[in-house]
Every structure is written in structure tokens, then in C-alpha cells.
Length: 386
Image 1: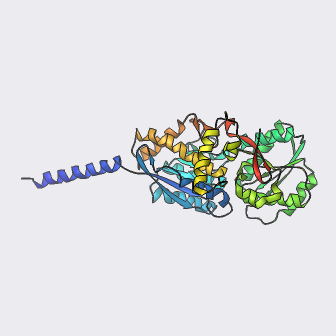
Image 2 (image 1 turned 45 degrees about the vertical axis):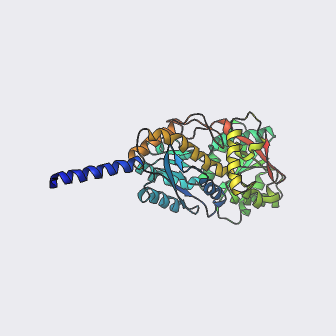
Image 3 (image 1 turned 90 degrees about the horizontal axis):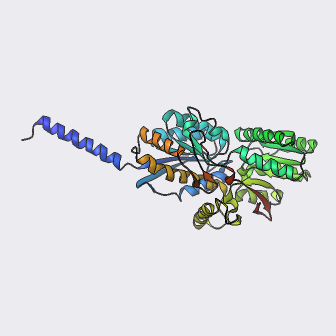
């Protein structure tokens, strides 16, 4: 006959077994905050769409995606991050879409020991890899890599002077710093520098100052459809020099809104934007075309953008890292989050939509020049420019 003491022990053993079983079959929870509305919506929507194409199992474990919209707002991005961590107990965070939002999220991710993969461009998101940023990774190319391509193209085209107009936030400032650094090294003189807000409806004052400086070329350090405004105003005011944009405009919404005003523009991009035009031996042609095929099968021909590609690459990084982390720890625990962080640092020679990733403890981007091509807007479409 079972005593009360024995019964209690049995119940405790059953409870312990239940906990262990629960851990063994725990789902992996991926939290996402994305700018699906607001000024950065043209970037965030293809990212959100791409999430629906990601696998629902990794390493044999079920994966749940909890997707929140931060409306392109920094405060909302931080609130979403904390909600995903405290309420949804996520194992990893993907997001956000923009540099200001991503920078603001770092503290929450680091404090909780939750790995974070940003889809924003600034190198400041992951550099230097300190106590906080050791938890943070990103998939878009660094500004300096793209700034080098722009300056080299300007100089090769005969430009001696350049003007700059960019967002009055971390994205614009980051681009200005990298652009001027490279320009000085290459003997290109930056003769004017202006800023504007993402929500501005006029930049006439800034454009008049640019025109007064008479630059041979102008770089617009902005992203999404708000990047059209300075170029449209410059065109209206008769500027005939060369126009350059950043990889922050590489989607069809920019072409649609810009129309004739953005014709002839040069910009650096990941290979995914012109995947079909890349030479057969290009290292990302196959992986880029794979993403394009999947996205267009779901959302229609011609709908793919580089921004969705950044989300896709975040998913590929997780697919590479999760099986490694699962060999060491169980999802839903601080130990698993730490193991996943370590596994992300160990990703090597992984081809993605934009480039080939080689992560390390000192490099939480892991891309090299294979992640960069020059593109020209010609006849309302993207043209690969070798």
C-alpha cells in the first residue's frame, strides 16, 4: 500500500518528468518587430512578407514566429522588444527595419541575454562588439562597403566634388561619416551637406544650398520612398549632375514613387536585386535566385526587394545556427539563447540572398565584397552595372 510520503515522491517524479518532456519538445519562439507601417513601410512590408516563407521547423523543433509592427517608431520598437522578451519568452529577435529602431533595441536584447538579428544597415548596430553588442547581429551590408562603391564610381565618372543630403537621424549621419571618410581618401571633395526628416514634405531650402555649391554629383543618404523627395526637388530645380542613392532604396516602391525623377540613378546593392542579370559564376547568383523564386511565387512577379532579402538572410542564419544550439541546450532557456548566440558567431561560408556570411566573435555581419554590386535605374528598372 502506497504511503502518503511515497505518493508525494511519485507525484514529484511525474512533475519532474513532465517538465523534462516539456523541455525536450519545447517550441522555438522567434520574436519579430518590423516597420510594416509608417515612413519605412516600403522596407518593412517585404520583410514581413518574407517571414511567411520561413520554415516552421528547424533542427526538428517547431518554430513559432511572433510578428509585431513598430510603425517605424523607435519607442514602439523598444516596447515590442520588451514585450517579446517578457511576455512571449522568445529565444531570438529579428528586427527592426531601420537603424534608429535597431539601435534603440540593443539594451533590451542585451539585458535579457537574447540574440538579436537586425535588418538595418548601420555598422553602429554591431560595432564594436562589446558587452552589449555581443548579442546583436545584422544582415544588411555595412555603409562603408557601399560608400566605397559609390565614391569609386563617382571618381571613375570624373566627379571632383560631391554634395550630400540625408536623413537627420542615425541612418543619415552614419552614411555621411562613411561617405566623407572614403571621399577624402579618394580625393573627392564634399562641398555641401544637408539633412531632412523622414516625414518632411519639402526640402527646397536644403536643395538650394546644394545647388549653390555646384557639386558634380549628389549622394542622397536616405531610405525607402522618402528618399525620392530630395532627388525630385533637385530635378525640378534643374540639377544636371550625377545622382546616387544608398542601398536603402532598393525596392520597386522607390521606382514607382520616383518615376522619371529617379531615372539614371546609380546605387550599390546586394545581388538579389539583379539576380537574373548576374554572371553564372557569381557567388550569390544561385542563393539569390532561390529567394527571388520563392518570394515571387507567393507575392507575384517583380515584387521582390532587397529588404525582404535581409529578412530571408536572417532566417538562413537561424537555420544554420539553431541545430548547433539544440545539440547543447533546450529552447525556452537562457542557456539556449546563449548557445544560439555562440552558434550564430560560428556560421561560415553560408550563401544568402545578398552575400556569403562568415561570422566570428569580432564580426557580427560577416559579409565581404561578394555582397555588393553596382546598379543603375534604366527605363524604370534595375540594371546590373559590372
